[in-house]
Image (cartoon, rainbow, N blue to C red):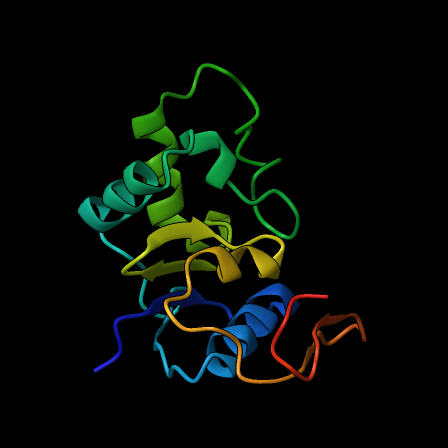
Length: 140
């Protein structure tokens, strides 16, 4: 069983690139398609805590009901914002990756390299054509 979990959206290029970098390290992660299987409140709160980030920084704005819900208003508490993310999982920014070395919001996708237990096994090019890992498995 993998020691890596990725909260993944297969429609997101950053999420797909992150998954590709994990696989390029020789790992097959546990994939949670969080739009189909959203985390519960305790899990989401734990992820936010271990990432050490403010709740607002995990909110996704683009392509979400962020504006229509008025989430930019400072009146919303962290608890309220988490509630909105649970009601509308698309508001949770992605991908979130959990490994034995840490938990990160992997935006950009290369952030995952900081927490992968194993080195890259070969070249990796992102979907947009950007080469990020050379043939020897080194970051470009």
